Each structure stands twice: as C-alpha cells, then as structure tokens.
Length: 213
Figure 1 (cartoon, helix red, strand yellow):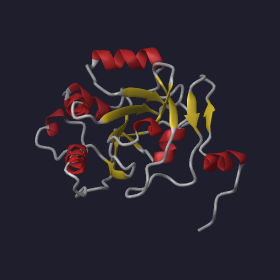
Figure 2 (spheres, one colour; figure 1 turned 30 degrees about the vertical axis):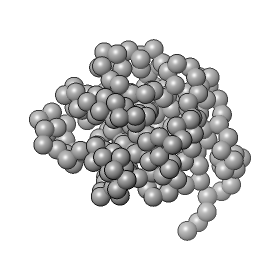
Figure 3 (cartoon, rainbow, N blue to C red; figure 1 turned 90 degrees about the vertical axis):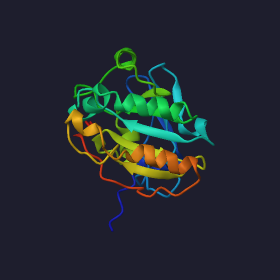
C-alpha cells in the first residue's frame, strides 16, 4: 500500500495537536488512520456550542457515545421526529454514559449550524446529549471515518472503540420502521455495561453523506 505524502498537517496529526478553525473553535488535525473497532478510540478536542473545547480524554473511564448528525437529513429526522434518538440519549445518559453529538457539515452545506442554532435544535427536539460539538473542518469526522448521518460509535471505559455503524437495522426514512428495529447502539451499550463483548461490533452506517469541505 502506498503511504500518504507526509505533509506538515499530517506530521502534526501524529503529535495529537489541535488547531483553531477560522470560527475560533478548537478542532483536531486528522490522524494517520481512521478509528478501528477493537483499538483505542482516537483522541480529539473539538469546540462545543458553549464555546469551550471538549476533549475525549476528559471522559476517561466512562462509556462514550459519538453521534454524527445533520438535522436536515431525512434519516436523522426519522429518528428525532419519532423521539427514537432522544429516548436512547436519555436512557444512556441516565446510566452515566457520556453522549457527544457531533456536527461535521461544513459552512454552506446541508446541516451546518452555528452554536446558537445547534442549541435551539437541542431544546426544541428535547434532545439530551452531554454536549454538542461543532466540527466544521471535518477533522474529527474524518478521523473516525464517519460517512453518514446518523453514524454511531460506542467507546468503552477502557477507551476502546467497541461499536461503529448504523443506529439500527432499518436503513429507511420511514418512521414506522423505528418500531421493531434492532437497535445496534442500545445492544452495544447493554453489552458494555455487562462487561460482555459486543455481538455486532461493526455495521454499515446508512443515511445522508457527511458534508465535508
């Protein structure tokens, strides 16, 4: 396999350096390789809607869910308009799980929002993430190989990535399909809480493509 050219940006990525985006929010430079299930989850620092930097390292020893979202995506709307995503958020955070919602849509693309609009969406949809992170450069999304919205990841207490993929097994926009769907994220969280291996650690994410720059 041909190795990528070592640019200054790539070199800094290997050092774990985070940089300021034009918006003033702290975002990481992409790592050499995308996140891999069974390996340590790549660390990052990104700007939250509060204006503060949030680091994955802040949640060491906790179970963490990463949710890539785009509020204009019909697949995302399916899960929010039925209350499915909010129910899962509340269930998880109520059990001590940290839930980070990440928006990687670049400026001028579908789903891009600023801090105020992101907070308004959280409030109007009655969502319950631990924090909403803005990733307008796409650095965190590309680090994790996030391709679709929603794209879901579960990180265990040891910091290992134990699940990556779809929220469930119904890759449609039909609201009726939420009922009876196999929720992969819920199953992964239950397995981690019971100190059991995740039976289905990788699935193919479905939804709208992430709107990277």
